[in-house]
Image 1: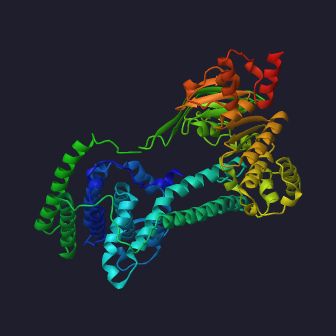
Image 2: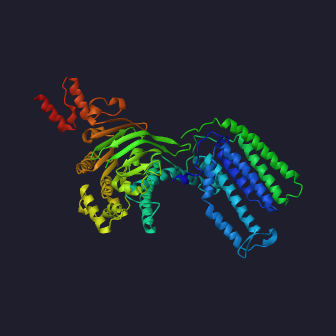
Image 3: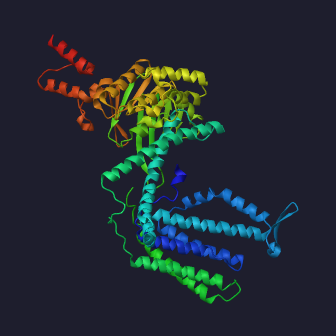
Length: 315
Length: 283
């Protein structure tokens, strides 16, 4: 069960936690876009990836995310990385020889280009993964659905059921831990009856899964029926106008952080679109990026020091 | 089969913000053939404790021995194949009726023994015997467990564990949510199994059951064992300090005591033994 709780929301009182969830999603989108830019050469690609990673690392430290969880998720990606590498080596590309040959396996040349290409994808994967980790670990699922509902608001004009979808989503998210507990409970009950979920022949493993899935589905259906009844009994009406217990305010912090992310994106776009290389004099973009990094470091180190005292809010 | 706890500690999700120490320094022996009750407030670690007994949970430090099996925090000392321990020590979980999944009752009960390599025909034979012994008759063999009432489904679930033919049977609140008659029947079934030589460990909140059936009582509070006693020691002397509810019979005995009638408490378990004791006192 332990690897399933990866990136689970943990309630700390940090700067990132306190940001408006709508802002956090926007920042995530902006930074994701920044991750996916192409550059003129590979050394620049790696440098830019490093800069973004540095930024994300600071974010992770501020929001009390352990690096162990990031590493664990990367370890589980090893197969994907392997496949990527193999495909990149096997698929012929234009100008494959341009960077020369890294080494030979027998008579088969492995080009530097294909290694760099797969390395680039891996770097993007790591960046993407750590970014989503930051979002999911600092934003409670309910806040997240609120933000989604807010983003879907314009669609209400065409009678898109934004609230219903958000409600379904929040219920689904709310019941993930419940179902996980239930899974664990049933697994224990069936292990007590001699089921081995980890070892054994394929046929007995299949039987083990059936012994888990059937009770799980039955309890999930029961739960949903009960929940629907309970909601109706309390007069739930999806069309009614709703108020919220927690009202989100867009604060100055939100504006700053969104601005910061956009400055970073601006720098990235400039480096990419102006087709800069390491040899061209890079005055403007480097200034932009270093200013934004400087602000980040100053802003966030200030926050780290105050945050260290900030205990976890609740269990 | 003797179950022995030696300095057992258990922590849930260690090294995370959700870290929680559920068991602290548990030293405990469950005697062979005993009918042991584990009582205590919700969240005091009862369920965690019983899961150590068949290796579902492994102590964070310390060790549990059950017969020749060793469940230890030390990997070198731990018995390699703990799944065999589950055949010897059966756990019937709370609301165990939720673990049924087969399309007929007999297949569901036979599922356990078949997991331990018993042949299909033989397993079905054991299943039939166990279904009979939990008080369901032949007409239930071919029925779907999902068509049965809650009480009968729980019987099927208990039969499913009994079919493993364990030496120790652990039950987590087997009477919760059953009507008085259903729980009475389940309890007398459990008592019958105890008389046949199976060691019973039972988690319960119902102190009347404790007084009536227990040979030993373990009182837990906040992950620690605060008292090990026989039921009459616990209830007829002082139970208030553990904030347990006093059983009805014990209240009657106390009322007699206050009126100057000192009944011999060692044998008082239910209404009949209380009446016997009163009659004996009058003579």
